[in-house]
Image 1 (cartoon, rainbow, N blue to C red):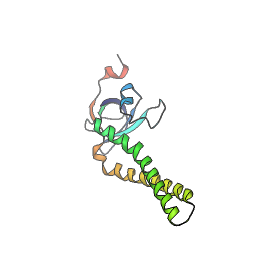
Image 2: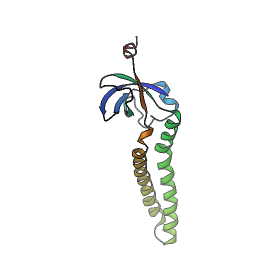
Image 3: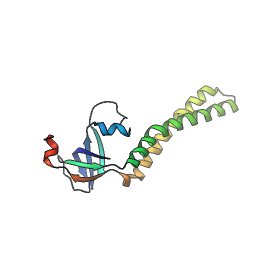
Image 4: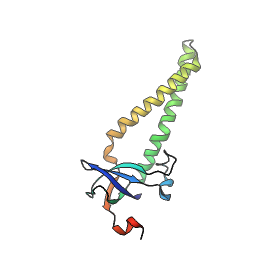
Length: 143
């Protein structure tokens, strides 16, 4: 999937790119985390050598978009539910209020999954989107 964006920052071969909402983006669900019409800022490997203020075309592999959407939306939910059921069992086994233990375990599972996602995000940074080219001036104004 390719998309146009505006470079808002660069550092060490990585470009921060502001992407506005568009129709193609709704197909994979990767950017539904913020349900508004504001621009999203992502980081991409700056292979094209883009500078701040330039319009660029970035490429995100569809498999990456699906995997990212799964990790962001499904993993924390599954972790919270699984940990909640585990907490329910632990609470019943020890004769402690199982509902409260389940809630505490569920919250811990959710928070733990978010910490895991943060670690995985740093570890797999090499799979970031890539700036494939600097867009032509005619694309900037829509003419």
